[in-house]
Length: 199
Image 1: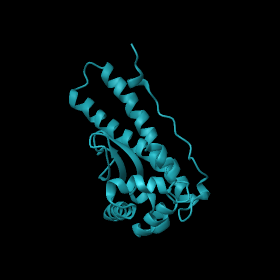
Image 2: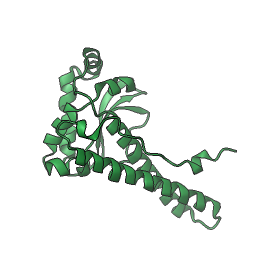
Image 3: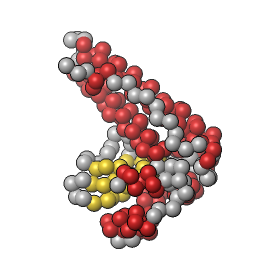
Image 4: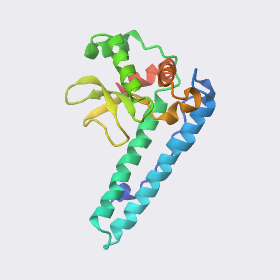
């Protein structure tokens, strides 16, 4: 019997770009974000997985304790994966191809209408925490912009296409409370080729 679901240990994915290569997002911030926030989420996830294995093998572990660990697993898994998607869609020149603009416009009317909504959701999360995700809803066969309050709230049956981290750790070091300036920098650095592959 396979025990991969209990024994799996996550390994960090390297940044797909040089940390100093981004425009308007400092090398110091990106390196700190990757090492501390993403790296910390991986360490926490691997620890939770180990604790789950121990708790499962202990007949005296109450179900509510086990469920608490499962909740942590959900949150840490979300953090790890969303961070990997976030870093994975950075490192580009911020210019979407005509084909990709057309594909996004098919769901939103125009590319600019989508961008305006995506930015607005990000601005609404400024000063707090969460994620903005352009996702393809497999059930509806539709691209939609989603507001995620945290790492554990993801729309069901939806494939993330573009992910923006709106936790303060993603921008505070460079922009303080000026979240809109960070959002501008994010758009300047989108790797639309990576986004196209996710489509």
